[in-house]
Image (cartoon, rainbow, N blue to C red; front, side, top):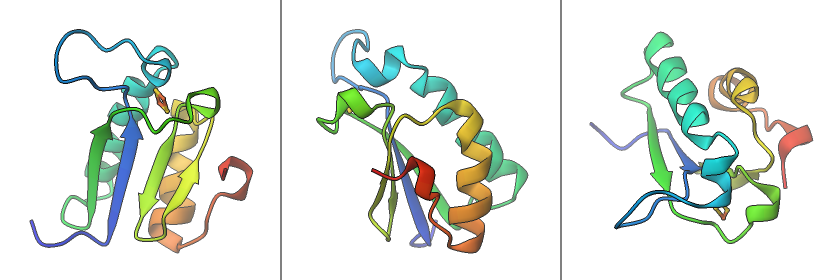
Length: 102
Ligand code: FES
């Protein structure tokens, strides 16, 4: 894969060892990851968009957290239902989803 145009980080409260226990994971961040994966595949953007699950961003009360680079935009309280809008607006058209921005 060449350097992606966008890199999407989704907090899945990952831990190196043991089960995931963090706040974002309990708020359905695994489904958010799955939806991003599906949207990226459906839109044939695998070469342009990289998706990575992460550990805690230390902003749990606003979780689930999604961060999009290169813009460095942080989205909070993201639901799996918001993924399509982030893909349509931000990833495909460069428009930050202001209602989710933190
Ligand atoms: S567990 Fe996601 S920001 Fe803390």
